Image (cartoon, rainbow, N blue to C red):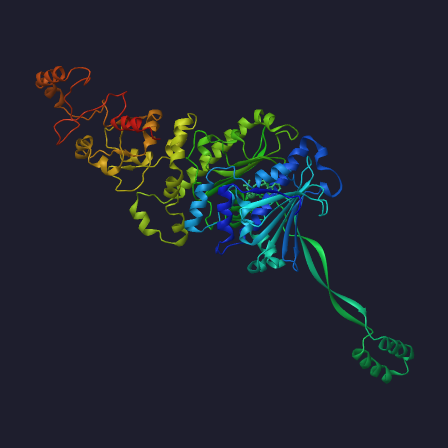
Length: 622
Ligand code: ADP
Ligand code: MG
């Protein structure tokens, strides 16, 4: 177009689009839910703005917060429009030309190797999925603060933006026109679109309407005028007395009707979703399948994986709210990547059904950021800014309850799981249902165990609850995971402390001289092999009145009657040793009963760093 301004895509976007447009990926359906999800986001935004300023909604059709899908079969165009917040010219340039979020590179990489596009929405690049099915896309948008513009691109490395002087004014919002490729003809089929909306966009909280065709049978006057006249004359001539004749007339009527039925196509808006908010329903009436689908739309994760667990509850009292929390099947790609800088919570906040924010840190502590969910509160005020909401006293109560429910949900997951260390039980239970649950907690631990450990470090109030959820291997667990409670139940009589040792791997720890004596005496020792465990053990001092004892540190007490005698008789040696090594090399030299075969071992002091911690501090890895 003549006065279009031309731009080049950011290199990364261009690469992504190249991949998409050349993709042989079979599940191209995903583009529709990405566009609907964007439309829904835009509607959420305008509704939120309208809370504090009614004017922004405008009047007439502009106030209808809905999504519309239209087909133009002749020109092979599929269009999706919303009456959301819209985009200014600058928004169009920035939002549909650059990628703001991190991790996109990783996604592009992954997609090239695996070809799986299912997670595209999680990476903040869902829009570009339009190029799976189209070779040319127009985005027409009108924002309250700007004129109407058209963004267009053929995915050839460049896009153009022009002031829109030819399309119908949108009032407000965005219309996306997909010029479908020949092989994407199936998306011009209304049934296909209905099916896709049902499958992927059921839980969108705004009406999704399709401009749907309807075949109606209509009675129209029959074409031939004579036949009508003929009918009329025959009718007027019919009478009671002429019974036989009438029958003959009737047969004639059937041959030549006065009107005929023709099929006519009309169009009308057809609502495709019922917008029921799942969290408002009675948990007893929501099926597992509905929760799974809701999770998929919430997490923008449309793989076949089911969430590991969920918790749906209704809090009453001073602060009323409804909430649904999910444990995802897998940890998101960037969960621990920038843990301490990230501000990402995955719990959406609604106030009286109105979406407020998905970036509310105050809802869950950082270590629970792996949970997905939604909170809808009737107690919070609607007509204040996000900043003011963030200060609201009710949030503290909500947070406290959410943490409690989240930890309950994880505890239940652990309890339902067949005892990992109990082999007898494992052999007996083989029904498919049990199989599904089997290993769920081990799976959870694998994905999110680190979060539980970070929780123990950060959340003093819930430390004990979290400690119950810890899993680890031990010198006796034979490669299986075990818990502190299980460890305690196996403690030897007279054993006061919980023994543990830290190191880089189980294999390395199994060879440690610190274990010799303990093994010989049949004591069980916990192996902590995650770098974060060193920090963890600085916060976890005791559990169920039992102290933790690092067996590589001073203070290990094993019952042995001969130690005292030996200490006396070897005093000259230990004394000589200590003076020979000098005090800046060792703190003390002692007779110990912790070894069996090795002649001596270097032990760190009770309050010092373990040798493994020293290594960690040197390499600075967490
Ligand atoms: P994400 O939705 O994760 O941000 P997308 O690639 O789907 O990533 O969209 C990029 C951005 O483009 C959105 O964040 C939004 O700012 C803008 N956008 C896309 N579609 C619309 C729309 N229908 N209305 C307003 N803005 C939109
Ligand atoms: Mg999106």
